[in-house]
Image (cartoon, rainbow, N blue to C red; front, side, top):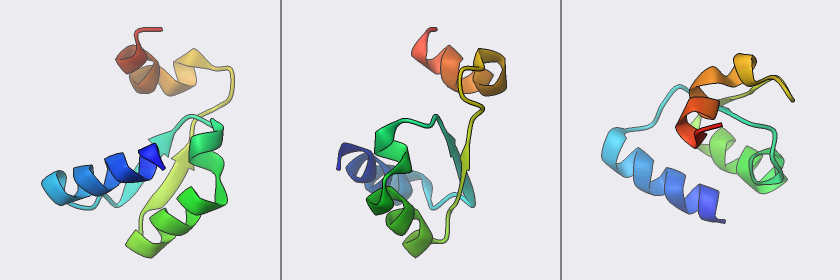
Length: 64
């Protein structure tokens, strides 16, 4: 729920992106998240599991 609430706010401020890349955590792989992004026409891409270099931007934002 927090992810979707955050994205709603981000979409309102920044506009709807054509795609979003996330990690493979449960908040991002849920059916609810899939339906939300499909409703908004957002292509959801997942990073490579256990690969910090494959998700460099995300890992940098998290400080890992």
